Structure formats: structure tokens, C-alpha cells
Image 1 (cartoon, rainbow, N blue to C red):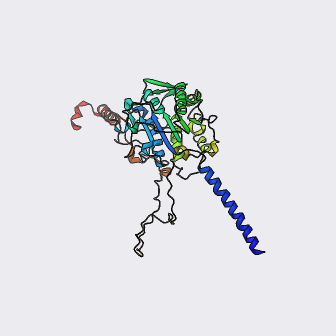
Image 2 (image 1 turned 60 degrees about the vertical axis):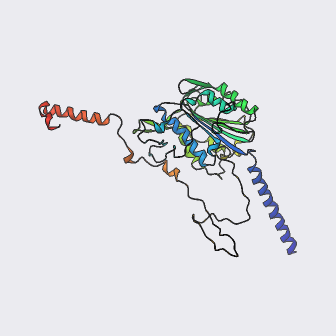
Image 3 (image 1 turned 90 degrees about the vertical axis):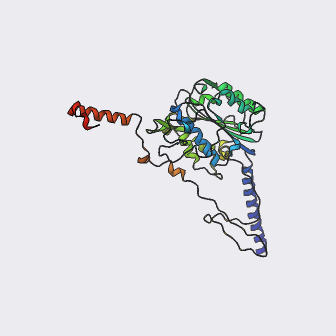
Length: 383
């Protein structure tokens, strides 16, 4: 009697385990994509639009951290804030006023910069209609198994987004470009995010399948800035992207967070504007779509029969060669930069810089007080 009972228990456990494995495998392949791409665009020039460059570089940093390589990222920056003569810390762009997190970094690869960032070039990148001489780094080489993240930030209005204060793209032109991408089998699923005033108006005309859209504000609302910095005289980020970055810092490549969690980013109590999203064109349930389906990358898997320990602190363990076998090394993951703690730090006092004209105004005040008290005849005691 004991043997049949044990066999039945073993069979039940095996069936349950098999069902669990099948469920995990089904979830792994549910997105149907084999590669990830990102198109990140800042459409604004001039120093007072510093925050738009910081917005784009923050998203750029996040997608690279989650596994999308530079070869699969098309980065378009309309201005180079890192090298601007007004920047008190050259070669840096900060997204927080504590000046701890430099989103420009030392390995940023800008594909389109300055006056290359135009509506025409943007639409050509999306539709693949680029001259033959265009290098691979400036091309979106996606296919029908690609999940694409498109992020836009700048100044916009009801149904349009400005490019460098000289031209604009309408929501109809953008919708038609996405339809061309679908007809030409250039994407599997597409996530569109826009941080601009009246951003929801930009996805109202979308009609292509497998497309999900998010915006920082509704029609008739402004998308507000965040993190004012007295040292450089501008705001460092926009509110929606700031809280989006804060959300992404808690995401890791194996995270189970889904799109419903992303929809909750920056409620009206934080953004002041009302973020919106559109999912009616998307074929899957947003609750089953992982954040890493768009912000991460499909990782190559190497099958091995050896046991690999990743729990010990990072170190290299040398094993004594036995019977002529080669020495083996054990590796573990290094601890990540605690960005979630950094972005909540208060500004350091040493990072404060007086605003322009402060020193000159102070000397003027001192001279006025001196003349009022002693007159011009005592001026020689100063100089």
C-alpha cells in the first residue's frame, strides 16, 4: 500500500511542477519578440530647455542599465547641454539638484545632434527611408519581432510637438508613420511615451495595432517642470519623467512589474497635470506586459549543467587542478549603484553656486553703504 501511495504523490508533484514550468515558459514567450529597440528624442534647443535633455538622457541611462545596448538605441538630442558655456560643470548633465547622478555619463552615444534633429529625420528613422550612405548607428534596424520604445519630450500643444522652435510634427503625421512601420513589418509591439504639454493629444489619432501610448498630460493641461536649481538658473527635469525615472530605478532585468504599475507613475497629486494612457490598440492585456518587454532587452541564454554560485560576495575562487583539469572561477553579481537613495538626498551645501550678478550686486551694495556713511573722500581707504 505504501508504494502505490508514494507513486501517486510523486505523480501529483510531477504534474504540478510540469504545469508550473509550462506557465512560466508561456509567460516568457508571451510577448513574441526577439529583440528590443529604443528611439529617444529631445526636440528642444537653448539653455532654458535643459530639463528636456536631462529627461531624454535619464531614459537613455535606464534602458541601457536594463540591457538595451547602444547599437539598438537611436538617441536624438537637439542641443548639447553638457558642453554649453553656461554649464558650471562641463561634460555633465544632472537630473537631480543634489548633483550626484550624472545622466550624461562617460559613454553616451548621441546619434543625431543639433540641427540633425528634425521632423524629416525623425520620420525617416521610424519608417526606414534613409539614404544608403546613412551609417548603421543612425538606423532603426527593427523587424516584425522587435519591441520598440519611443520616447519624446519637448514643447507641444493640442495635436502637435515642436522641433527646435522652427517646425512641428502633428499627431496625424505621427500616426501615419506608425502605420507605415506596421505595414512594413518594422515592429512587433510599440510603446509610445511623450512628456510635453497636452501630450495626450499626440496619441488620439493612432490607429495601428499592437501600440500602447502614455502621456504626461491631458488636452488643455501643461506638463510642469521639476527640480529647480539656483546654480544654473533652470529646472533640471520635468515632473512626469522624474517620477518615471524613480520608478525605473526599482526595476531590474528579472523584475515582474507590469504596465499597470507604469500607469500609476506620477499621479495628479505629484504631477499636477493628469497623465493619460491608451491601450485599446494593444492586443495583450497590459497586466501581462512586463516593463522589461520594452525597457529591457531579450537576453541570450547559455545552457550549462554546472552549478554556479551567485550568493557569495564578489570574488574569484581558484580551484586546485585535479587530474589535469583547468582551474575554474566562480563569479557573483556586483552590487548596483544605490540610485534610489541618491535621488532622495538633499542638496549638498558645497554644490550651491551664487546666481549670476550676485557678487557684483553685493559689491554695489557695499559701496553704496560706504558712500552714505563716509562720503567720497574716504574712498582711498578701500582701494
